[in-house]
Image 1: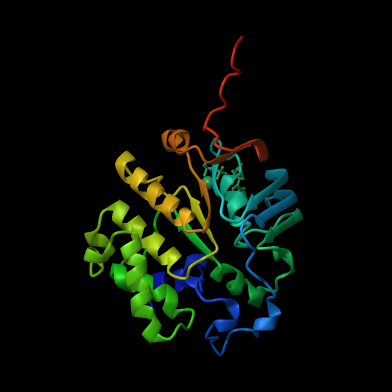
Image 2: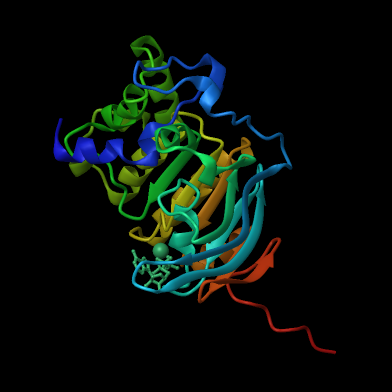
Amino acid sequence: MTDSEEEILDEPASLLDPKPILEREVSPLAPPLETLPIVEAPPGQPMVEYLSVNLTYPNGVQALKDVNLVVKKGEFVFLVGSTGSGKSSLLKMIHRELEPTTGAVYVDRQDISELKKHQIPYLRRKLGVIFQDFRVLPHKTAYENVAFALEVTGVHHRYIRPRVRRALELVSLSEKSHRLPGEMSGGEQQRVAIARALVNEPVLLIGDEPTGNLDPDTSWDIMQTLSQINASGTTVMVATHNSQIVDVMRKRVLVMQRGTLLRDEERGRYTAQPEARG
Ligand SMILES: Nc1ncnc2c1ncn2[C@@H]1O[C@H](COP(=O)(O)OP(=O)(O)OP(=O)(O)O)[C@@H](O)[C@H]1O
Ligand SMILES: [Mg+2]
């Protein structure tokens, strides 16, 4: 196994599992199913909840200050705010890359601070994560990158091919499934990353500046893809600096400022609108 393959094993996006928890083929190393009593929430129920969350990094930086937030199942949420305002810190708590210093984070109605270390892969299998720098494996084709996300969870090989094909179809990459990342544009590589995040049918898709390295047209393309995925029921949370897209898409907008939640607007905009006069 190469270094980058080992690295991807640590990524939440590679640890997804599509089937309801009781139907999973459990690898011999996996903990018993009853150790993680997470049941998928029905529409409208909370998917992510932050309760009085504070985060202080070891160097003393207070990155999050008393954040209270509920994201419901099926929502599409933009997280915006200037650099250093706490967006990534907030998202990293969902897959337990970070834990609150005080307060609690619930994902799918489970207080995730209660999860033991060996249970964290089960949490991550419910999530798809997309990053600014794509993080696709350079020596694997588009197909192999997506298939790898299933292979590491022990999905039987006969289920892999149809699911990878469907995921690549969803991101319009069927024709390029045999290409290596080096033979694809940045936008295409990001679509491979989206297919990889999707192949396990996560309940929640998290994007941390997924269009940060892409040109405006490609950024639109990626956000439209995320919007379509959301339309099929997946909850989506996206941190972005792309004000144009946020202003046109008019989704729920959460604005962070110096570690606090400054605004929370349904059908919001990137920048606060001045009060109407008269
Ligand atoms: N590992 C870390 N150790 C110490 N401080 C950190 C660490 N990561 C982030 N910070 C600090 O925490 C604060 C929030 O950072 P965060 O990365 O969450 O911001 P952000 O909103 O995602 O910014 P950007 O838009 O630049 O991605 C910043 O002051 C940052 O310098
Ligand atoms: Mg960030």
